[in-house]
Length: 104
Image (cartoon, rainbow, N blue to C red; front, top):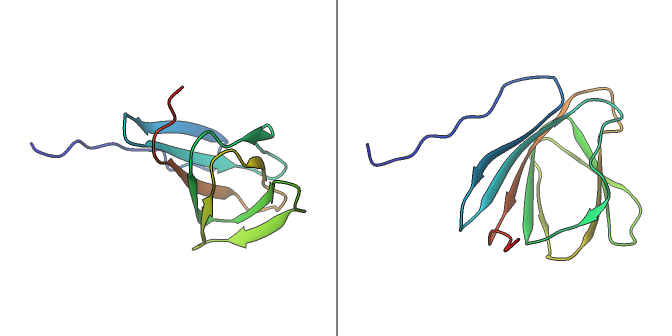
C-alpha cells in the first residue's frame, strides 16, 4: 500500500486529536461544544483553520473576536496571538493544519 491512512473521530463531544504530526505538517481535528475553547496562545507556525461545522469565534492579535461559519478557511501567520472559542450552541468542528511543522 503506497498511501498512509489516518482517521479522526466523528463526535459531538469535545476532542483535540493530533491526527498527523510529522516533519512536514501538523494536522489537528478539533471539536468544541458551547463555551469550550483553547487557552490563549501564540501560533508556533503558519496556521490554516477550516471550519467544518458550527461557528468559530476567534480573536487574533489585538483584534476583537470575529466569527466564521462552516466552509471558511483562515490563514493565520506565525507568532500571532490566538483566542479560539465556541460561543454558539451548535458544535464547532475545525481542522487545523500547521505548515511547516513547528520545530518544537
